[in-house]
Image 1: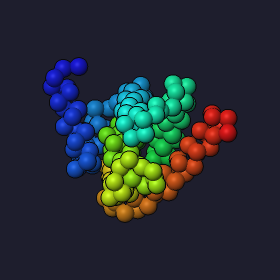
Image 2 (image 1 turned 135 degrees about the vertical axis):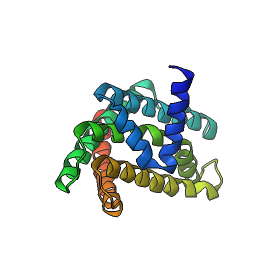
Image 3 (image 1 turned 90 degrees about the vertical axis):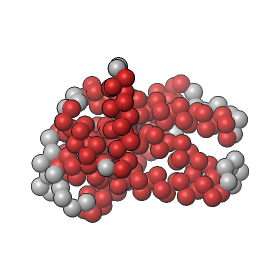
Image 4 (image 1 turned 45 degrees about the vertical axis):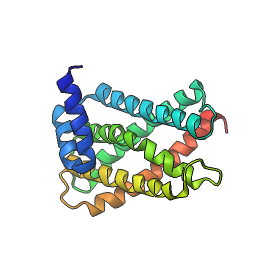
Length: 195
């Protein structure tokens, strides 16, 4: 990967946090295929897993979950990506959206990739919420803040993929979609973990 490509990737990732519709438009114009989208999901997972492992070791002195558990998490994340991409495409179409299946896959994968870099803030916020957390309690604001930013980015990117002008209905649909995806993830992790 050239320096110019890395710089472009870094700029578009940063822009996902300041102008998510423009960032999504760029990703859609590139036209990533399913393999490219899955690569974004894998890289996002790697960033999150690395952050979780580092956080676990620094904040509690304990190692994180083992490789088998991490592979199960990756499988669940890939399944959630497919489910979200399907949902974004089909639900959006029902409400008059113009997004193609490929554009919807691209924005879902791009959202997962970009928001993976919120993982350190989420980790600090969640640690601050625990009674024996190593992080001062004031950092708990990071937990809800990362959720709000993530939902806003997702809704903006989906709105761009479908050509929706109004963001509020997409935000509400996104919240419902995240709730369903979270429920499915909880069930899948329970099945995979044998619980």
